[in-house]
Image (tube, rainbow, N blue to C red):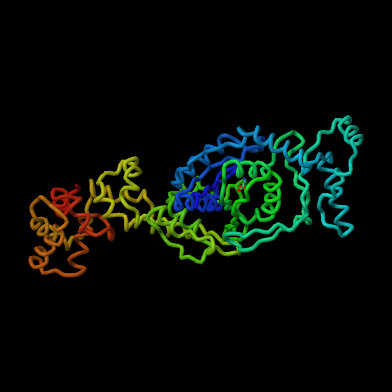
Amino acid sequence: MTPPVLRFAPSPTGLLHVGNARTALYNALYARREGGTFILRYDDTDTARSTEEFAQAIARDMEWLGLTPDRVEYQSRRLDRYDAAVERLKAVGRLYPAYETEEELETRRLSRRRRGLPPTYDRAALKLSDDDRARLEGEGRRPHWRFRLDGLKVVWADLVRGEQAVDTATLSDPVLVRADGSYLYTLTSVVDDIEMGVTHVVRGEDHVTNTGVQIEIIEALGGNVPVFGHHNLLTLPSGEGLSKRLGHLSLTALREEGQEALAIASLAVLTGTSLAVEAVPDLDALAQRIDFSKISRAPARFDPADLDALTAQTLHVLPYASVAERLAAIGIGGGEALWLAVRGNLGRLADTATWWRVVEGPLAPAIAPEDADFLAQAADLLPPEPWDGGVYPAFIAAVKPASGRTGKSLFHPLRLALTGAESGPELKALLPLIGRARAQARLRGETA
Ligand code: GLU
């Protein structure tokens, strides 16, 4: 089997939201798992709405998610290919000029509705003679170009939805070239998918009808029809669809909130499937879970409230290697030992700073008057350095018989004095990091 080629084709007209991330992840992770190629292709031929800033924001979000494309393409730099495809479609009689204005089309749609007809394009332009066209152009009208649909039933085996059929006789002939000469993605996607050898097109179910149309265009251009999969869409908890334009659940905002990229990835991939939504240690583990047949057909609610818990669960299993750079960037030392000691207590990565301060000090110990003598005695019983992971059990084994304390009356004052907090990571892991000098001072009630 030849390695698959997949692509994610966002239009740079807004910030990516979790629904876009879902599409990106399905494509990128499937390609990664199957040893294939993943293309990031900016669908930016709509120059009125596309911006370079949004393209850069998309690149940053993709990098943050850990999805490195094997190839990056901008459709705005590939216009010669679309020109050639347009000539080809004209040559085989599948592309025809139409001159109606948007207002005229709207009036016609309304009148068709009133007469109980579907509001599809009536193909009036197909009946124009050369003279008619010359007259219209003489009036200063520029044509847009429509693809003449076959009006057949287009059928494909969808990776998610099983057998799908679109009856193109019920659709308007799609406009592929606007009057200003710019191209619509209905054409550009197809041209690029053919030329880039895309084998799998995985995208949202809002594209199902498009796929019927696009398969006809692919065939008219003599290309190979890829495998299609249309996943369900994510909605807000209210059921409202996500909108890039309205900035719903943007990855940028979630990153600024301190959510973990891997938690978002897990939630985006696993929500709306029959699989359990759970934290994973890395993207490869998530890639293993991708199974298009397990995606449900109904829209799935994405609740950002679930993200806090999943971010915490993700931190609890993240290996040190995947956070080392980020910890260094926020001035946190302590290496792997600190990370392993504290990760189970984190809600956000930034919380590591709290425990780093507990380790590094200075910290004012919390000591109740009735515990002062006990803690001073404990200070004298701290084992000599060097310390390793066995120091805390050894310390407790000495303090317990000497003080006669057990259970909460033993452990609680020690924790308060050593960490200044009621609860937190295991002292077994923290004490070696705090070190003897600071531990002794804190047990004696000194700020250290
Ligand atoms: N820019 C289109 C979208 O994001 C691309 C669709 C496609 O994947 O072909 O909806």
